[in-house]
Length: 277
Ligand SMILES: C[S@@+](CC[C@H](N)C(=O)[O-])C[C@H]1O[C@@H](n2cnc3c(N)ncnc32)[C@H](O)[C@@H]1O
Image 1 (cartoon, rainbow, N blue to C red):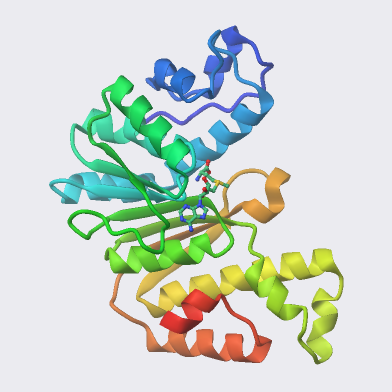
Image 2 (tube, rainbow, N blue to C red; image 1 turned 90 degrees about the horizontal axis):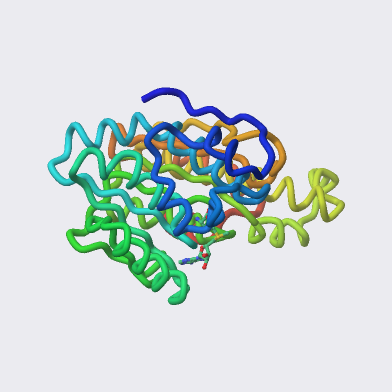
């Protein structure tokens, strides 16, 4: 697939198309309100589209694998929101392949109802939406080859990790946000290290960093190879970490020991993961 172009252009219908991938459905982007009725792209939509298209590019190896190896590949997008990611992945990959199911899991009924309507109007008949918390969601068939969670808030990303284990996912793509739980635990901690997170902004950033480090170790403990890179530019520094995991064995005791050692030394860890490591 040709590389996407991300030229900085104004909200001009004639130039907005430069931000799209070749073959991308303009009608779908209008239905999602990413493009206006005139085909223009405002600054917020451009940022979101850029994130989603970067993610689509970064997980392409997983999609290629699933489409080649699985008769009916399953992708689950968790904390789907307006399901931009699921719709765009379906449009770019699954519709063209003529096989595979894309699930969106979302707690808010209004967002699920809108997504169902857009899927029906678009003829995307292999898209499904599950109205549920991620923690309680179980897909028909019980398996998901690829799990994505883009900006699933705070502990919802941990729910996504456990969902992926429950559904035996081969690939997991996470872009966490609003990691607040660990920062709150750090607030009461003692010892020389607390200077590292003395001020609220430092606590937020250090807490987010520690959370993601422990998430990576947890995934390794469960047999995944983990790569951590940035999603897009630094305009969202706390929402820009891309964690990509591929399972290659059932477990890794050394990584489990590292998870336990680090969480004990710091006196903090995502509680859902600590309970399941
Ligand atoms: C910041 S939005 C991101 C939406 C979408 N992934 C995106 O990047 O455009 C987070 C979404 O996750 C949903 N959400 C948060 N916690 C959830 C949970 N535990 N279970 C299911 N959905 C959740 C929220 O309702 C919201 O729609």
